[in-house]
Amino acid sequence: MKHRTLLWASLAVATHVCIAAAAPQRVTIAGVNNFWRVDDTISTGGTITSREMAIPELKRRGIRSVINLAGGADAEAERAAVEAAGMKYFLFAIDPMALDRAPVDPLLKAMNDRANFPIFVHSGAIAVSRMSPASWNSRASAR
Image 1 (cartoon, helix red, strand yellow):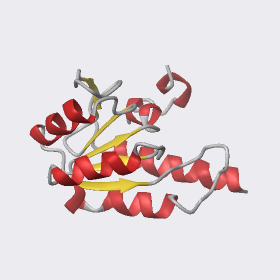
Image 2 (tube, rainbow, N blue to C red):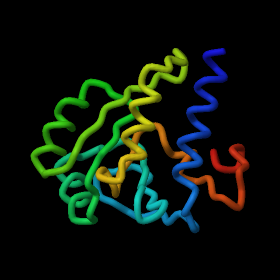
Image 3 (spheres, rainbow, N blue to C red):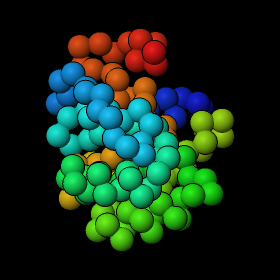
Image 4 (cartoon, rainbow, N blue to C red):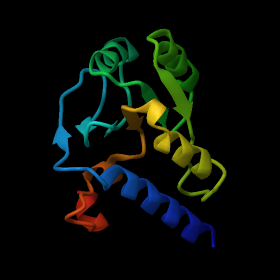
């Protein structure tokens, strides 16, 4: 049952990401692994490897909110840097092995609040970013 809940939550996030998506664009952003611009409202990527380089660039690109799906030891330092730059920060540490539904509803609420757009979601959203409305093949999106 928990696995099914996480699957539905993932599908809801993918649906949100893909509604208006054309072809996602891979962009090189110093300090961010694997950055993708999905559309005007959402970008995604892997780990922020350098807050000093990444945060000002995200701000320059118009990002209003950063959503961290991993948590970890650097999460509070990342929060401080993001908020110091005038952006919103959300932390929804999702452990795919625990299948805990607790962070899913707040995540969906944050991702559906237009006041948070444009959003950068990182450390867990790579496969979602590569899905497109024309191809709902999750196996291909994981490549």
